Image (cartoon, rainbow, N blue to C red; front, top):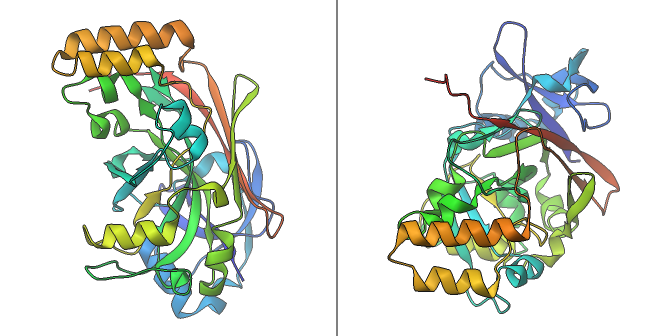
Length: 334
């Protein structure tokens, strides 16, 4: 049976892993009941997955302790490689001007973006077009190497579970920097809040769960995004097979599966034309883009909050939520 596990910082500053035995948290002040797992302090995600697969019964017993949700860290540790899919819901592809998807769009994101589900998202100096993207993160169970073929029959051999993520994006960096710097625009620190839990699945549960996950995001008291994983254009099995043909991936690595429609940035005809016209003029392209996008919408500002949730529709199970506040980058930071 699937379990919810989490990682929290104890009073000594060490990272501990635990099994959640109460309702999943949605806010920093929630108090939750957990059982500490029989793994070493500061273990990485892949170590915990391996321990569970070797002897899941060891995760069933222990003393219940109470933890405040603000202590939670990302359940994906920063040794992970993060690969992202773009425009993977029809609603988001359409608002970006890509109505007919022909290829899987893949790109990377730095693992130092990972942060806790209730940590602040820091808007970097000079970024004006800060945007959100609620996503399902798929966490690997087994290594992917050249020649690996993943399908619905063996998906659980390669996928350990899922985690709620926010693929925060600096649109002015992504599209305004030289030759469109997606990696830089996605990779500032704090740009991947993850958790609160890792939904750790048995092998035979994976295929069904990955078709029945619902995610949502609320910004300024309005629901801006909602989708079900069955709506993904390029689903996990196909994507993992494609990635195996490109690179090796390890247990504990993270695949962000894409965001649904409802992001702040919209691909207007004027924006698309500016990107084409000023492809080799970085400064002009950035200026045109900022003016166009700010005319249409208000981007994330310091003090704004984001509320994200995920649940398993098949089991009727709430998988918790994130609550993040946007903070300004400190001028005194080293």
